[in-house]
Image (cartoon, rainbow, N blue to C red; front, side):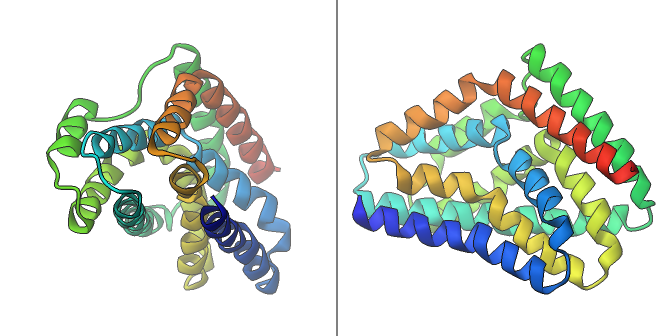
Length: 237
């Protein structure tokens, strides 16, 4: 696990250390708490873990060596990052004309939605059955991981668009800088996927961890909703 620990430490430094450093250098130090709150709320969304659990189960039945799992897993994460970033650009274009104060109301509305659906345990993952079939039918290769990652990202947006829409609304007013901030946001968004891939001792443990997060989806949704409402109040005040 020494090599995996080094990889994970590097990812932590890039996701959190680099983001904090760049935000500080850009004079946005006061925005750091809100930045990480939105990105982390988005990243620990139960839908993300549902998608990744399906992906891990599909890999486990193919009896791949550890190195191949890492390579395919990284290609999957890269594809999720790329497609989610692209979706974010689209959101910024749409929300660019929306006043920043609207982000506050949107955050509160999405926060309440997260809490209610969490308490009622309503699934927000789109096309879960089709996604499962795709995961098991896709070849266990780098190309397959990229195709699957690009595809599943479309299932994440309806589920996790609350914090992403709020974030896009806020940063869209920062012009060219917004694209840099979007890239930093997505580094944090994919961080849990790296944790699952490298921090666990085996594929079985990775699946168990991901499945445990899915089992606690109710609690995660309620916490995410409360944090979103807090962000909304911060924007309005």
